[in-house]
Length: 217
Image (cartoon, rainbow, N blue to C red; front, top):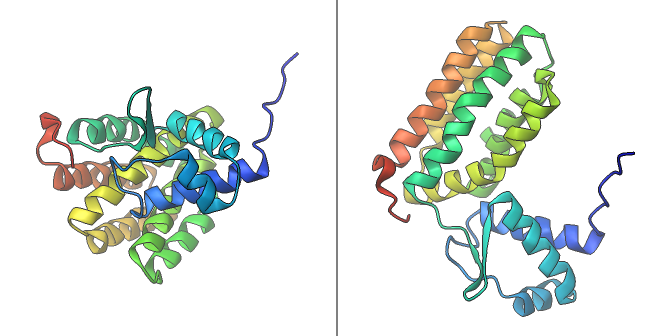
């Protein structure tokens, strides 16, 4: 008999989402220490929900837990970026291809682009772009494929946040998003998948030209 996983307590979920948002919007920087007592005081909770939230974030790859150094926001380098984006290149275009072939609704993707275009700041735009990509693969009809992409979603967003901090290229990426969506709405499964592949490839090439140099950003 299979048992459903226990839901995360509300206080832990609150702390988890707050820390994740701070990391993905650049308020907490790669390499920055995350001290349980400080975070507990900041959020008005005990150390237990903070500890559990940090464990969950370590599982998604956003933070690193070290016995001697404590917990820090994960550093981003070219090797890490290419590992994450290689997974996206292998899976995301195929998921979009299936979404288009299945004539699934792309309303959520359209809404995400509107949110990105009307965003008031970089953080809001980054989160909307993240929602756009997920809206392309979520209706693909393969839950396992979606879960695999969800597993690297936070790490991909961290890579984007670091890259944008160094060189904001959101206008170019917004135009590429529009092209991907136009092809998908037209029912061009191969064309939209190819455009998405090129979009992902070009982002990494621009943001991390050092390829496998492994230099911290």
